[in-house]
Each structure stands twice: as C-alpha cells, then as structure tokens.
Length: 96
Image 1: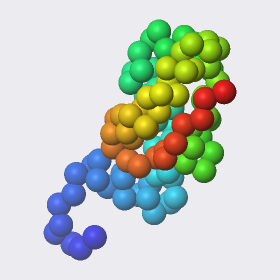
Image 2: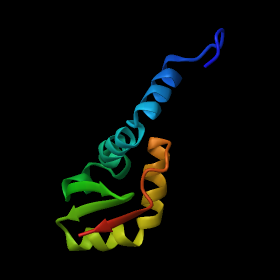
Image 3: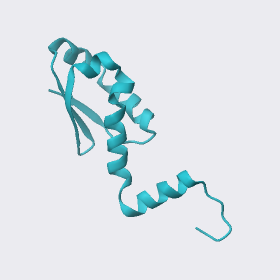
C-alpha cells in the first residue's frame, strides 16, 4: 500500500487476513455459520456435523427424505452458499 492511498477498514482487515493465511479458514467458518440462514431453520434442525475438507462440505442429515431433496439441489446449494459468503469456499457437498 502506498502512502496517501485511502483504504476502508474492511479492506485493510481483508488484506491482513490474506497476508497471514487466515482468509480461507475465516471464509469456511462464515460458510458453516451461513448454513442455517441460507437453507432455513427447518433444514438446519435435520442436519448435523458440518465440516469442510478440501473444498468439499460434508453434512450429516438425519432424514433420508431431506437428504434426497438436498442431493438433487446440490449444485444450486453450492452456488447459494458461496454467494452468501462472497467467496469460492466449496466446490461440492456430500450428504451422509
């Protein structure tokens, strides 16, 4: 950053996180927290153990009917979750 350049606080925090290697874990955390907001409370009640490993979100679903429904909409869910976080965090979702 050059002297005299004006940056917002949000941009400075984002740059600092990127330099320290914290951007990816922070985005992953934000995506996991957004699960209930994007899919709703009803879906959140039937999902447990959300984990991200190698850009794949693993979700344990306690209802087989809901698992099938989520599986059919997997690609749109990936897109919606990434859009909510405003970053490419996951590339796929695995439902168990």
